[in-house]
Image (tube, rainbow, N blue to C red; front, side, top):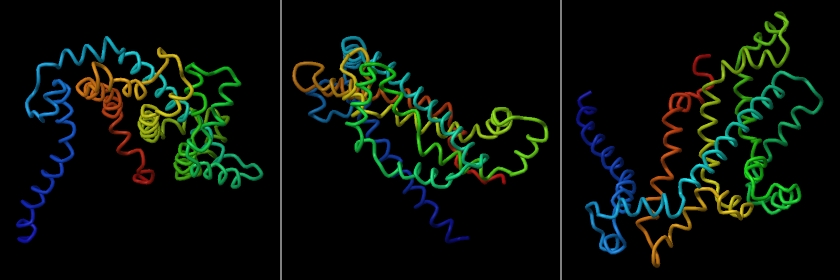
Length: 272
């Protein structure tokens, strides 16, 4: 016990140092977003006088608000679509009996080993042939299904008591009623955790929007941030840091809103 007390100050000191290191880039971005290029090059450690100018340049002149709105809608649709298809896939893999069920599940898991970049050219041709380029449908429809979501809900439903489905059948509930009235109310933590992860996935998409969208008004925030490097004359870092800070706000708000289900969503057997 005495040795633990002796080690406690060093543990706290180490944690403080780690937290300081993690917060340093954010603090630097906050300071840099208020400075001009000359102040940034001189590594000024106090706030500058260009905060409002950089904000106006990013928000009004370069229409960052439009990019953020497009990304928010796209990410919300992708996260919602993956949650819905994942729930339906988990229901089928756990509560339905059909030939080749295990083989189909393995094939779904195999897609986890294939990054999007491998098939992105073929995906682009399909979307273009269907006439969905430069549209919200072209950005979201190819990503409405997820092997990760299917696996997550399959594992979650498999850990629920088996007599739930039997009791629902005795009460005369069909599969859809069983899903809506029993499974979904017991799965809000998993749904919330999946929504946060997939929202961040959609928010950070860069390559696919860059290829599939040529209309500036339909573009997303990650591509828009790349244009902020030339927000002024030559290379401009203040607006770029301002844009990066503003672009981090929606994901932070989503995480804060769903923090509790995110933290408990993967503890699938905690209360079992």
